[in-house]
Image (tube, rainbow, N blue to C red; front, side, top):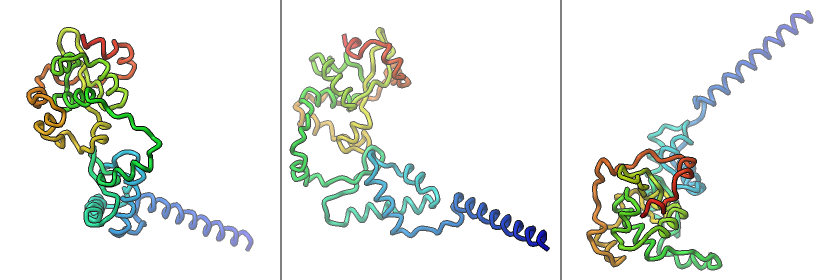
Length: 248
């Protein structure tokens, strides 16, 4: 009799263990998770975008919410964007660098600046802005070509822009000396509130703002020899000459 009871108990415990394993597997597969409503999805997306240190892309959102249908996540994001466009407040949802960020409204900048008045922000010089504009509109471009455009040596300015991660080395031009090619970075897009390079101001507006001559900022389609090479590894860059060495 005792053996029969033990066998029955072992069988029951075995069945319960099997049920738990199947339930856990179903949860991992998302089979038993209830479908979230649009309001809950919007709240989750809002929290993710707000907490993310970098612009959050729709792809990253769908990956984090992999148990939800992709079309539901995209629809919730569209509704969240509409909510921010219609609601009054000090925050706005903006599309920048291929992703989304929740930021303060630009017209409230002066008030936010007062909050951080003890922090001094080192602004770019006019020379740095001019150089950055030339790179943005004519990338990829070499240091010598930038110098030719601006008429002054830009080695120090290029180092500043590199240190601030606004530009990067994207390869070498296939000419004698193989000088570095420079282009703007994702940080550049974020700092200037651009989704991509097509959002750059019109050349005429930039020329007027910086007091430059129009021809130097005219966009151009790079020839095959100017196309950037594979971005070099950090070790390779360290072994090469410093950027300013290819300026001359």
